[in-house]
Length: 133
Image (cartoon, rainbow, N blue to C red; front, side):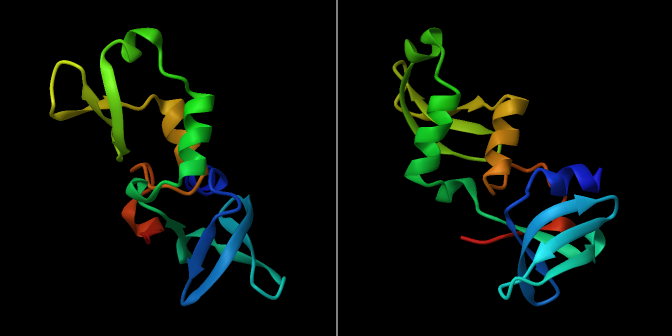
């Protein structure tokens, strides 16, 4: 299971002790990392933490890519006035019927897509992640 979780985050930064390295591969119970000097090392997954960003810090570039990849269905566009933000469970939206925000839950594919971009969507156990703004 850990191999799958880490494999979803290739290219992301990970912490190993005090060092920050790039995750470039995963093999069984090891992470393959590259440090700032280009040195490649094999690390036990148990010693690694994936560095993630909160969804509140999603970039405009990733928002555009998200909506290009997952366009809103017509029936949702008829109800949703505005997307206010992203959080762990789904999009925070304001509907045309209410000035208060509510959630539109992510599908599994949408959550995996966001996770692959380095965002915390709540699928990684706390002991294997570190969330930084």
